[in-house]
Length: 447
Image 1 (tube, rainbow, N blue to C red):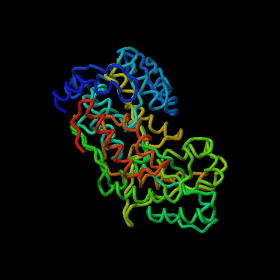
Image 2 (tube, one colour):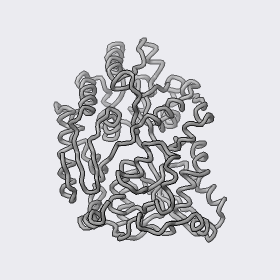
Image 3 (cartoon, rainbow, N blue to C red):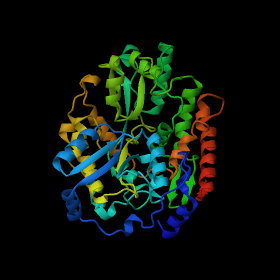
Image 4 (spheres, one colour):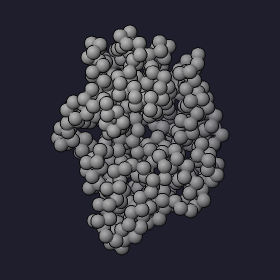
């Protein structure tokens, strides 16, 4: 990204709104790539000297990682703060950046939100720390996420969400329904299930931005193109048409449960068999085991259905990374923690506590893939998740203001689930809203 682009973005205050309630942006003048290299010796010296770092994160496995890190480095104190999940933390983070006070040394940021901070230089580029040498350790989707559509490395991947199809085997067996391998077969299965049991649905979907973008990703749609401050938003490609054609039928034929995800009704439906599948990220098993205990033994995992028979393409859904906010302190110490947590001994600690890895060595390890899941009837589900991770195309981009775009999803695409608006019309409306906002924020936006 050019210095002109950086100055432009600082001047217009790109991230000042972003649906986060912030009033000002960070103002660092030195891009990470222009920083002096930080050697391993510098990092070791910081560890020897000790000090306190503040880490904002909601991911529970980091508690043990922080404790282990402190034991290994007795002079270091890790102040782990849960400032809220995703958007709640982003609001707090942006407010702290705006006030230039209370900014954490390390922050958990989801891949879809990375661009809004990276493009405005609110995150430290980790290349001077040698982070680029770690690229081969990660699967394509997460590594692409921390690049944020640019040349920098703005975080280290913490986990990933390669998609799979979670399905209730008991329900499928009861009605002699084949597990779908394509989305056309999925539509057929939805019709068969609804006919066999009018109270049952193939899945629940009332409209979700993250799910929609993941489905577009898998279908080959690339609605977002980002080159510095030049952005293109276009939902008119064939991949988008493949998704809307199938999903519109599911909506029109009332084959989707009108139940919002993560609600009590949703958990109840997953437990009693009236919601028969979930197409989501590989982080889901722990949520099923804790939230849908009645379904233990009934559920299984299958590869994500394909848009064309014989293909093996997946997508990411969810996942986050640990970044160093530009206004944070103790950078060498903060980087040492991030590398420990996401590329060192902390990775295994997190896996042992139920996290899903972004690291290829762990994804491919026999120990990982041979893990039997009692919840899934002893199935070695990680074999499917690892295969999915390897089949995620690495050329997907999010908007630099994806947080804002997602915030207006229900006002655009979401209308297709509750009115006569079609998904195609909804995507067009989402496109127009995204173009309008980007233009207002100083981007050159094409469509």
